[in-house]
Amino acid sequence: MPFIANFPFFCILITMFGGILTSMVNAKWAFRINTLVVSVTLVLNGALLLYLAENPQSFTFMMGHYPAPWGNEIRFGPLEVLMGTVFSFVTLCSLISGKKEIFHDVKSRNIHFFYIMINLLLSSLFALIYTNDLFTAYVFVEINTISACAIVMAKESGKTLSATLRYLVMSLLGSGLFLLSIVLIYDITGQLLMVPAHEAIVSIFAAGQYNVPLTVILGLICVGMAIKSALFPFHTWLSHAHGSATTASSAILSGLVLKGYIILLIKIIVRVFGIDIVLQLKAVNVLFVMAVLAMVIGSIDAIKERHIKRMIAYSSVAQMGYIYMGIGLGNIAGLVAACFHIIVHAITKPMLFSAAGGLASASGHKKDFASLKGAAYRNPIAAVGFLIGSLSMIGIPFFAGFAAKYYLSMAAMNMGLKMWIALAALAVSTVLNALYYIRVIAIIFSKTEGETVERRRNSATYNIAMIVFIIANVMLGLFYQPIMDIISTGMNLL
Image 1 (cartoon, rainbow, N blue to C red):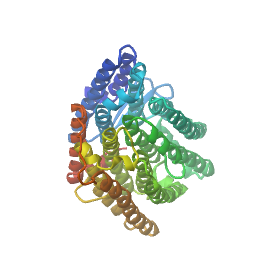
Image 2: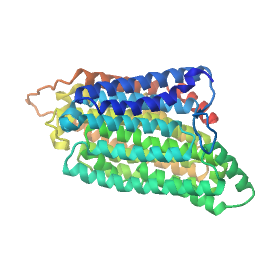
Image 3: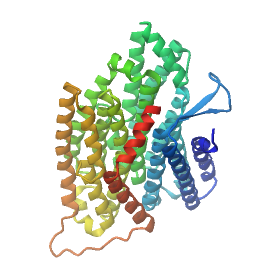
Image 4: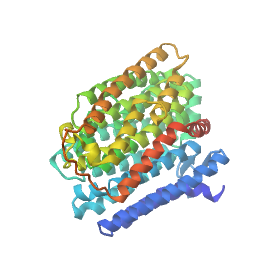
């Protein structure tokens, strides 16, 4: 095994040690250390992605060289490394664009604690992407939950405390269902590693044994991950968490945290159960129905909202529906399209939150629509970012969101009734997306005649992050085929 195959383990370890280091320093050094740590993980993941693009294969890294059931494994191929690279990139851009607001919203004595939680959060996301062990996945699900709640609560207001409690209760419910499913899998198969568990499940299912328990297990996993990723009807906590948290927290929560659970679910569907068994157990049909409802109802809730961050949060509910619809189609093309939409949303939604934060800061830190009138002239770079992100989410050609919706449509072809439902849901949701995003664009670009505009000066890091976000979104919309090739290759190796 080449030395470069150790990089996923290094990424998990480096981020965990980064949390230890940031606990020993002041706020400014915590930011610097955190930026360095995330940058290193981006370089490591990027280097490994380039290697796997030229040498497509899957690696299994046995930690400590102890076999199951005592040992632990990391398994990765092009798909996992691509996700790890995107997660590092988005975390870095979200944190440097939101630095000023972090230092404004979080008390100075607590800023280094905020960056401790960011390091632990990124470490847990890497573990969810790379682990090949179900119980290890559960452990890092809980680390992810605690650290995500902590960065929401960092602002320390009554609203954030209330939002955090909602988030914590719902998230722990999802974690509990996932833990129960792992217990049942171990009881039936005697395995915790994903591949040996798959072999046991295939044998059991072929013998016609435990079909009802397997259905229950898969249902518990799907509902648990749906709760944690805010799929309808388990989404009510999301808008409160986004609306009250600092902008960087909202960007990371929506762009990354929700996606980590979905990636874990896809791995379990493909690597533990297998698509054929999942189809026969009919769990994907339930996910498909929930996804279609999320696409429509999330958009309707966004239309009714008058707070920009909560509106973007409800938009995330609709976007979770797009991803779960790809999973619910129950074919490889749908899973590939879902993974591509994960990347599109991971890049676009943090850009929208960062842009919304810049527009709000230029409007006296007010986030209601009335206060944002003319904000585009006070903060042009934020306005451009919001415009590009909105066009992408609507699905305008040449932006990333269009390619994602196109591949979801193609994945639905020849799927019978599901095809017509999926195409109708995509069309309705696209129209609804346009209604609420264009409304906000009109508000921020409107200006009273004769009004004097005082342009806000952004930090250099904010401008750089927004420009990088914009370029990434446009590039993903124009040159999506290489990404799709990597996802398709990685799905076959999953």
